[in-house]
Image (cartoon, rainbow, N blue to C red; front, side):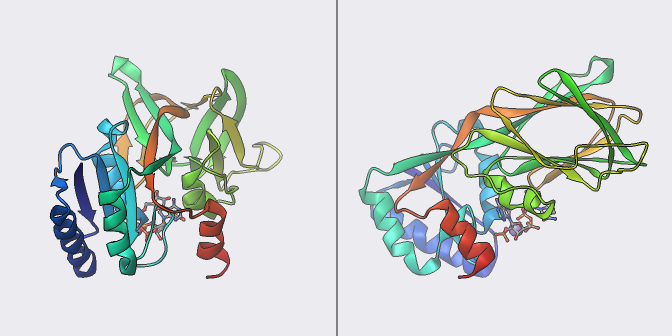
Length: 264
Ligand code: NAP
Ligand code: MN
């Protein structure tokens, strides 16, 4: 089996990375940064986001596992003390895989520019570059609302505990193939009206955002942020692709939610 390890880059994570690497090599696994069967991320959730984007072209062939060197993470749920156990599990057992849904983002441009497609593990947000953000929101081909405010956030179920949660969105279990639309500070008065609640869309309902005036936006895909000019539309839906996590022991999602947000 071929493996790769990505580190957050701090001393603690790097030390752990080198340790795991030499243990796994001792077990006759092959270090292959280009075509790994398993990617071990050492650091935090942000490190796993980075690893996901690095290997997003081979999601069907790569499984991910996360070790956290700081606080408990949603994607990084192994602690440094357990790495011997983890290494043995990786080396010895054919591991189980759990799949989580991803968000597909397609940005189309005015003037016939080539469309761009992204996959997000957490979410994609859209904000204006200048002035108020104004977007027509279509759901499944039907006009839904004209949104005015700071921006919009479309998240995956596993990303629902990240930015989405700070916006008052619900936490969705990652076994649900769905995406969630959450508002950022919508303008609501006698003239302007939005639904005001987060919406959860099933896999066969796409959400299309169409600029009303100003066509330039700041679009984030997880930790990546890009300026897009002359945007015609942004289409969001549940992606056909999924992320695969190597699972060596049960750690139920609701327990991770409890341990991260309620109490240890
Ligand atoms: P960061 O600034 O380190 O991320 C902010 C926090 O979100 C960190 O504590 C990070 O954990 C945590 N996080 C990441 N994914 C999560 C998930 N699925 N569930 C719960 N917590 C999660 O930047 P980053 O590490 O590059 O992560 C990028 C993410 O930051 C974005 O995808 C977005 O979700 C989030 N973000 C949140 C806000 C907000 O809440 N207002 C604003 C901007 C961005 P680690 O420390 O383990 O990395
Ligand atoms: Mn981080």
